[in-house]
Length: 267
Length: 302
Image 1 (tube, chains in turn purple, green):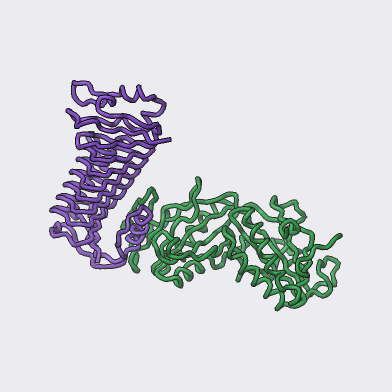
Image 2 (cartoon, rainbow over the protein chains, first blue to last red):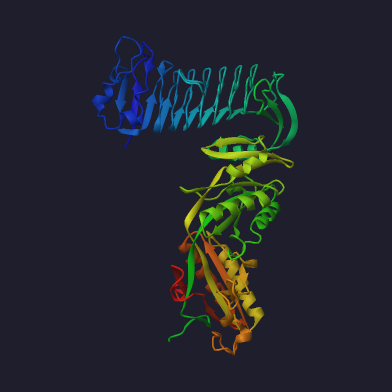
């Protein structure tokens, strides 16, 4: 069965809420019923058929083609299946998703993977602020799963992160891992100010020493971490070859809060 | 009775009687293959028989770096007991005392499955509050700060209630050296079979036992029917030229695995065995009334 494709006809005139276009909702619907689904976010009615050319049948395997930054909530609340986005994604990509996979060939807007509970999101280019952060109405950020960002992340990446792993291939903005509760953020590029602000038990892994370190982190020196080897091996299994080695300098913090979090700066 | 021979060694028409057990597998890694082996050997030391060791355990196989969760040299260890509670206790004690303590070690789940045994889930308390939980790919790991650095231990490991213990071969020969050499070959051949271990020293038991004893309170005693020094006795099962009998006991995660191991073992014994002086391969059973698993040598050879 060929993937169910949604090809954007033209740049939409309003932001689109694409959260209905997930396997659980589409299962059992015929083409007409799918095209009649509302994706509007204003009082002006917009259906799937108005903005997308729909092809293919396999609802477990969705393709969005030519999407742009107004295509919000792609894969939001996903409970299984795979989504490929050949284009950009708007805000709340895969927000609150539980399982399944989302691969975005372009970039994504703010709140990518916000409050997600599991599954995988891979974004090839940049993402906006609060990736893996707190979705509207939630108290926690990402609660499980894996976000791989190929490009840069905005501010507050992994805000209130509770569990799971975020990898940022490029640079991250301010407050990386801000108020994180637990979980791991691997930062391969530079970071802005206030990384690890309010971190309780989370791990921030830096490929390079950050330019600005909060004064509320205390140095434990360099040692071996088998955890990093475990992480490296697991990432390799996901197709990400990132050399972490085993040695890192450990700073514990944020001592302004619980202080059981850490920064691991690879050496 | 028609006699079945493999390369001149008589295969006695009998069966090995084996019992249901519960089993688990863990993977131990270390900075070097040598230290992984030390850790695994220590953990499976004094684990020959549930009669008095609490568990039966052994090294299943050596894992290359490419097959371990952290990319370091590793060892797959199997552990068996008669019930889940005992397995949990034995696993906790053995990993806690022998793997946690071993320099540079880490311990991971080696078996999937619905039912789980606590691994790091109980050992984490050694961290005294400094332990850290990490979930990667849906699996929870504990990082426990220790003097050597950090002990990484997966939260839980799987277990199977379909395990089988007590698969066995008895090797009878005209000299101790012939029987020992044949059994050594067999244990080596069985090491290549997945999902099994041979828990006794070097995989070989020289003191096979029977159930019960003339002494009250002694639950097992020497298998006198196979002791060559007691060949005069009417109970003896040995031919007059037998000088030694050694046994290989096999525990496996499945009955099929035991079958495969016995097959590999019999053929390894027979290979050159008759020339060296091995005369018979037989097996231990209790008449078939105690254990539900019967491994008939005749069927296994085929």
